[in-house]
Image (cartoon, rainbow, N blue to C red):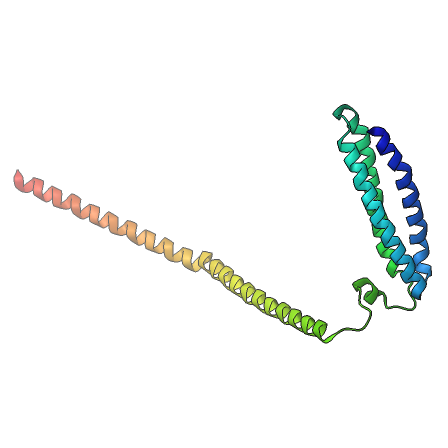
Length: 190
């Protein structure tokens, strides 16, 4: 099994080297040459992904005691492919004189259809609705916070303290009356 994996490694190396050289040339091209090169690299990137999947399957079939070394190599190859993919995306929009980089990045050739315009308007309206809803919720939260702050401020606290002291005073008066009533009852019974 390890030998199958090792058979795929040189193929992967050759393929990634070819992709790297083409990715470096893409920014310097324009028009049909650039489109052709991009299509070619996309095809090779797909081949590299498929080759990597085959290698991954081979690693899974390797006995556990030997798998660690191959797993580390696979991880390295996956990182290399991810970096190549990132570089490829950057090269497609870099140094383009003829085509607007933003349109190329978004995959727009400048010919927007009526359906696309309608979709954009609907998305914009949805965003505006969500923004308004968010602003209303923010105002409600701020009002609730302000009420909490006011409630916790001195006025409320003072009211509570005054009511508490009045309640304590009333309790003392009631207690004093109860004591007096008991004394009067005790004096009368004697």
